[in-house]
Amino acid sequence: MKKLFFLIILMTGTMVFMSMKKTGDKPYEIGEKVDDFQLQNIDNSWIQLSDYMGEEGAIIIFTCNTCPYAQLYEDRIIKMHERFIKMGFPVLAVNPNDIVQKPGDNFENMQKRASEKNFPYAYVLDENQEVYPKFGATNTPQVFLIDNNMQLRYSGAIDDNPQNPDAVKINYVENAIEAIMSEENPDPSRTKAIGCGIKAKKKMG
Amino acid sequence: MFKPLLLVFFLLPLFTWSQNDFKPLVLDYTTLAPMLEKNNDTIYLINFWATWCKPCIEELPFFEQVRQDQFPTPVQVILVSLDFRNQLDSKLIPFLKENKIKSKVVVLDDSDANSWIDKIDPRWSGALPATIVYKNEDKRFFPDGFQSYEAVKEVLVSF
Image (cartoon, rainbow over all chains, first blue to last red; front, side, top):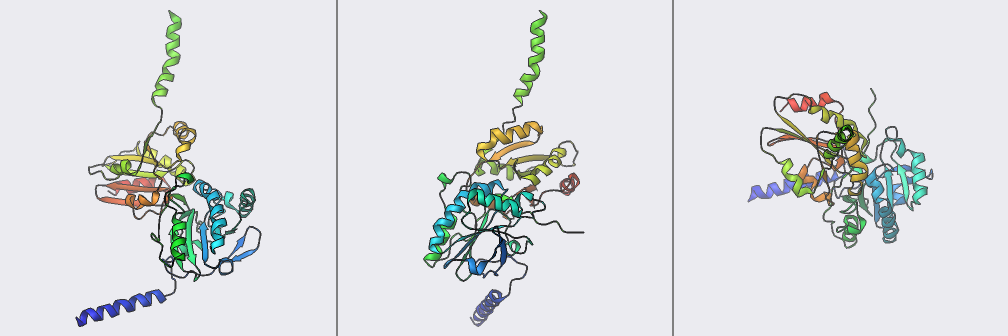
């Protein structure tokens, strides 16, 4: 009995220690506070996450111009922003791709795409690729939902039907926001979706 | 007498061409799953790709080359396309014809990817390309695409 008690203390201690530990190389866990970041927006201004987020949080979406899956979701992302900014969750679109390998995703083309589609949200470039690896982002499009404490609450797919918005049965982001608003944990808190692999910069030498 | 023969001569290649119509099977996860769970003496190379995915297209020739090579263990290549269902006739089939793709091609059309990505392989993020090479229980996962035919060959001879 004493041994069990000791074990519980040890485990709790380890968990507390782990949650206090600063982010190393591992991507953010669900519940972990994300680091603030500042990236350049298509209107040349600099967007700081902590300033940009709404009263309740933000919907950070790693996306780009060129990926057909990202394109399938463009209209839905616009609607999502218009709907959820009222609830305190604006969309922040972040293009994580290496623009050398993907010139179609460079700053000029981001500006072009945004004006064609009239993006109502900030569309920033992770030019040094220092932001997306912290989130553990792998594909476009991929969502990371944070709450007003900048804690990661949900990551993954937008909904369960990329090809047909009218046939969506599960709206993962909407469900996650509803959960946060009712002070519950989103379930599922992580999902996966098919998408385009993020193009990392080629290492020199 | 001569004319009908000539006609046959011209029509024959057309006929044989139309027989090879490159119409791949369209599967959902349930019907694809048996291809990922075979228990025999063959090495299966299952590649997830799409015609719009540039790194996918770049590595396709390496998988095609597998057919022309000899391996101690038989190898079967299955190319699983994730092309959109409304682009099969306009993009996928013309691509297969144009590039004379000889490997087996199937289309995976199953909307809620979150329900099947982990079943295919928990190591897979869902990003394309992705390749699984397996023989019985020995299942290896390659997320980033192969850079050369030699890299593919190295994996295949290591089983």
